[in-house]
Amino acid sequence: MKIMHVVVAVAISALLQGVALAQDAAQYPSRPVRILVPYAPGGMTDIVARQLGARLYESWKQPVIIDNRAGAGGNIALEAAARASSDGYTLMLGNVTTNAINPHVYAGVMRFNPLKELTPVTVCCEVPQTIIASLGFPPKTVKELVEFARTNPGKVIFGSVGVGSSPHLDTLKLIRLTGVQMVHVPFKGGAAPILTSLGGGEIHWSFMNLSLAHSFSKAGRVKVLAVAMANRAPELPDVPTMAEAGFPGVGSPQWQAVFAPAATSKATIARLHAAIQEIIQRAHMKDFFARNFLTIIPNKTPQVAAAYVNADSERWAEIVRENNISLTD
Image (cartoon, rainbow, N blue to C red):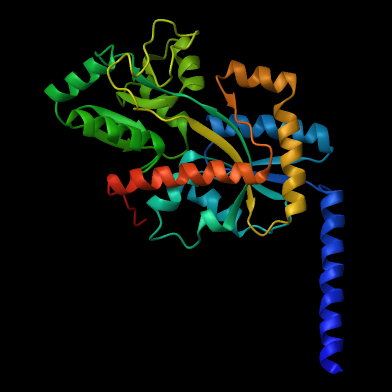
């Protein structure tokens, strides 16, 4: 009889806990929500996070705090998100580098596993990459850049948001295809410091998302050598695609996605997914995405979002292995 009483007590406890979770999800959010951003302000991840935060505030009438946690290639924000309470009040806006590549690059030293300890809520958008260069850098095309590097081995400097980031891996692919030697300078804090260094001529070139590349090119601070797109960007009609430049398949799109601690209830995840998907389909958000060359990624459920992220993570895992990249700190 005692065993039966224990079983019944456990069942009742589980039932009550389930009811409490359902009630919490129905009332969510009832206090401020924090969105962790893995880079300093000014980059595309930060810009998207702030747009989402503003629109979520309008919907929820609860403050949405954007918390920039730059450093360690995005791993500071990753770990903070993984260690956060699974109540839905701490989220992360991650991207291809932080959530698809870092788990493989830093696999030997991470104190947590982001692929298991974080779960995708929804993929929001992606943006094409470009190759941009300092105005004082002589090459005007990607082929000229390669030839300049060939005749000046070890003197061409390229920047990225970190060792093992997607721009770094895309550059390694270009280097492997051409056999040239170039110097890598990894930056902390995302795209903003790279653009500053390009503007000052401290580095020569970098892969950069089309939104920021177009903005800084239009302002006369950098030049765009090529776009990693199937067709030329209408806003940059004179800039060839990477295929036209002679390097098809080099340059990967950058996606942005919202993540939550893996133990977050399915009901809360579903509520978050629905809220964000509704927001990114609004007319003014579609206009924001279009103006910034961002393409909305459709994913009807959190499970579809997870499949998208996991598939891309597996693809990048192979690229990391091919380049033998493994960081110890």
